Image (cartoon, rainbow, N blue to C red):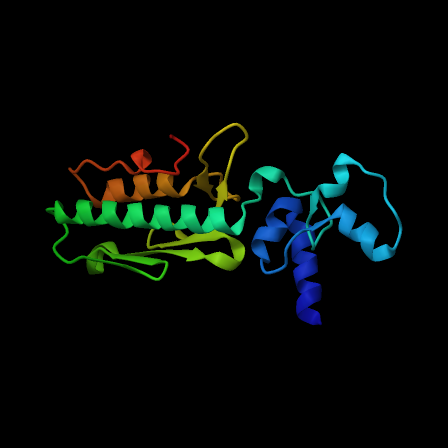
Length: 192
């Protein structure tokens, strides 16, 4: 019970969008669902089908809601292309004698040796996120955002506003000195 109370307090402090993302596993509910539970009838209204955060009760912006099938597809494509790109980068690297790229079961590990550290990029299906662990920037969480009117979205850190591909571009540019690095040309970046 104390754990639930803690989640509710944290969710309230975070505000509407981050609540659902931080404490996944509980789906948002709709205003019409609340009317059904109370037994009252509600008038047909555009707001009745609005998603509401289960923690704070605030509306969740529709741009942030991605269905499971879309998440699975986009996440798999993102990790596949990142794995292939890291393989190509490392194969042509001259300044990284000890390296290893391993990808499987939704986890991409890029070991750049004892001096440069290890990167782990993995899917987090319950929260519909991709997580990055970096020796430079630490742990980050990225949500797939689909802006209105665009066919594809991008992975963005809700706290910093930085995308997954931007942070990889910045940090890998430091690691692969003297080598052309362009993570921004890959799918699902804000630059596409």
